[in-house]
Length: 395
Image (tube, rainbow, N blue to C red; front, side):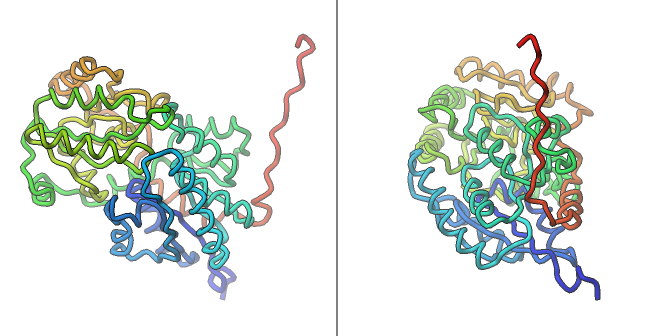
């Protein structure tokens, strides 16, 4: 019997919300099927909140082994609530990761809750692998969190080559940094998306054109996280067409946004709200919609795979690498309306035919699994310092 068969590699994966779970689905599938892996999923945050759809049920339906359910999300709408959520998550994860000590801990992206498992893993000397480091989103505290996770992590999986170079520029050794692509794009290659009729049945409505999908989240770098929302909601109120709104994430200001969305639906005809759409339904909707509006990273990363016009509003995604389908608009009502009209023009849609998505081709899960199951664990915690250039004599 081989040593690997006798002692499988124990890999823990943390998921906090519908968004990161949709990205982690195929890496989880690959890891769960690998004979040399003992997989454990740690679920926390909005997944366990009825207010955000109790999405842990989706993980349970998919059959992944849940090792711990960490109740930590405060029913709050403030930055103080966000900070306390991190603390509560640390307390729960400290016990959970001590009880089931993994050989590796896999984290993704840039949500504030991810600071908790990273901090606990550091104290417990558990090596961290991180997905989607090296990107830029200057309009959110996510940008700082992503960079912090990069420096705490020991293995990196980047979505683009530019992101890989940025991680290396931050002092990470090149052998630790792997260009994998965004794992959410694996759905486009490996999952069976719904056709228009099946999607309409799932949503319970007819997709009459123009069908506009709206996804708007708090801009957490601003003291007033909803300062840009006024212009966005005003523009939507004046924009014709069918509007499909998905709930915001659980950042400070999300409760106020939910109320604004409900008020818009009450006053604007042909407006529909969904608390949660599973990954297959959401990607299928992007494949059938006429445009995506808002400030969501899904407009930047996934919509390009469908050559879907995106009106990206305000500063939340500032600095992200962009495909040609992105039309940026300042958070000004008339500018947003003008940009929406441009996005819906046949000429613009036609100009996107044949475009490529810079975030990958749908093979990320395979790369992630290959590296996690083969990287030597000995001395993985010990990073070599980046050489410091000599000071110029003219300094």
